[in-house]
Image 1: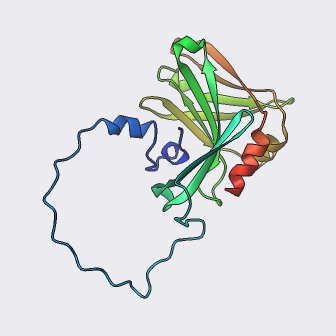
Image 2: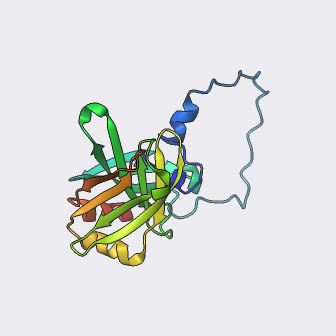
Length: 203
């Protein structure tokens, strides 16, 4: 799962970074320390910020036609729920097992909408990626930030493009260059996107 915080350079552990670090051996266990006395709650103890209620499931998903809304509590934003609307795209034939993901979301309700693109390692990095949509084509360009087990590109989405995304019915495509600098274009379905974005904003 692509995470907005990871693409923004924050510590949100997930499929890209989480997988890379998951194979590291665990540190030797240390002897247990003596049991501490129960702490007395401080009178001015900080309460969870609005939107950071710890109740409810840690991770949820909901499907809106061709889009999936995924929510998860993130330590990168103080334990608040971070939600994203995502679509998985097939690259080539299914036997190759190559996929891309395109994601829209916000780290906080006040943050700008971000477009995050995940592509397999081996793309031509200098070219970046382009999300092109609408009858009168609008282009959102995203530069690659890093490649570990996948290459991640991300960019803030302008207010005008956010409005257009909620109204457009397509067509849309994701464009990038492969390692041989050959152009690749993946079709993106807008079916369910408006509903997914609305649900994401309410989460």
